[in-house]
Image 1: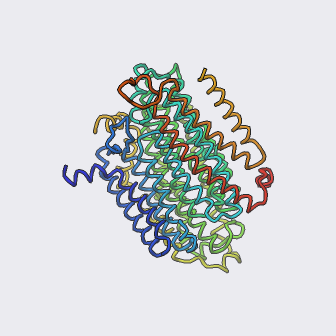
Image 2: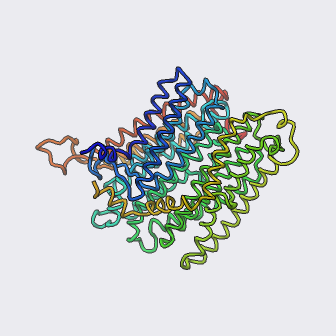
Image 3: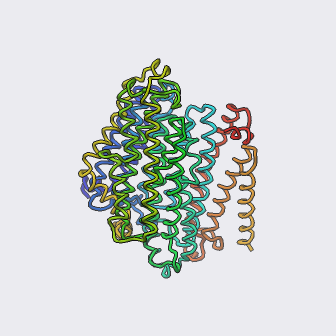
Length: 525
Length: 112
């Protein structure tokens, strides 16, 4: 075998190894902060480069890596497809931005104390969770990601953080136990944990003697666990507590990386694995129908509840947290239609992916902005702020672009997400009118609500008279540049949408392509 | 007989975990979460079947008669993970006590 061939065959684990290596090296080098920071930056650049090069090399089809060359259903497979890599790409970009922001804002002693290492371990866990093709392995990567997020949420271990951290840890431990129960059940009923093999077996339940009602039960437990991790109503209550208490860069990572891991797992399990078993429904009900109806209710509730709650918040972090709940609803709503109506599945996935990318970038920028404000002014309460737009223009421009990208104002990136949402019920063959009219109604109400809380944030915090607390303080300019980076990304992705749309389209195609996934993992060794 | 005993043990572990989770004392709630996690591990073991012999392959043993070794490997991994999270959550408990001087859930979260 030539050297170039062997490099290609190992490339799907390269980002994983880079993240692990950087995490270990930054842990070892903590005597010298300069060395840690340069290693950390170097590692992030290498990670982003490896993800982007992988993203372009999987456009023709997924790359599969079998650990220790054990063939697919027996060993652990890693599957790098364009869907997972597009999400990883955005996670890498958000992490890079957060890292640069942290260098200037997190205390030096704290940075020495394994901060960089933890960030890279989080990226390591997210990489594993998005690339793995094995259900139990997914659980393990979830725990790796969550473990680092526990430490990062309680990083300064202030009184607020210990309490919020406790809520977060207990909830996720319970979630983990339930995930384990459901994985055990799926293994006992189907006899496999490999996602591709699972999908293959579910397509012939009689041949493998699978009882579909049990699979349905366990899939619903998994759904609840993923809904908890992505913070959908009624499992949302940890979101504002944790986001408000955690350090701002960590809140940016939680919404940009950790929540998206739960979202990814939901899409991967319910749109790549389970559809193949959907041809054998139990009477009227199939797994995807139940999933679709429950998700429709939960995400509609999230949109409305998150939007209304965000309106009445005085604290910026709380407002962003509730907006995050509402935005997760927007991200999940097309998924419910995709589950119910296979004909619009790919269009719905496109909307979900655009909204996910948009939310990761915009929320990262907003949380970092809130961190800047808290560091300089000492308060994130809107009642203490005012006139920030004249006081620090760069920060204000970033906040303006990000919050209105969440609302979906053209020409910012978020507009295309909303556009794809709206053409979903209109442009396809007539789907049941009840769903499409409800869908449009919820979209309209949700968008109006998000517009209102965006205006609320902007009017009270950034317009009006400069308040005394604001005029006494200065926000360091070097902290604001990284916000500009996110803003420029949002605008350029919006203006140059044509150039990124092939990537999004191929990501949506690979997310719903069960047979291609099975083919790649089980038969293409 | 063994399946019945195991089912009873599992049931009592889950109910004990849930019961403790609903206590007012944060330490008891955490013990409840830990027991729930361990109950999930025991449950995972039973999912591989418990009727066969030890999963050591030799010439004399046929593949049919051994217990599924995969779930046991899974549980080993899950136990290691729960060791890590358990130690973290106990240290965090100590920090909560340091910061707030109480472990009473009503007093910690009551005035939220």
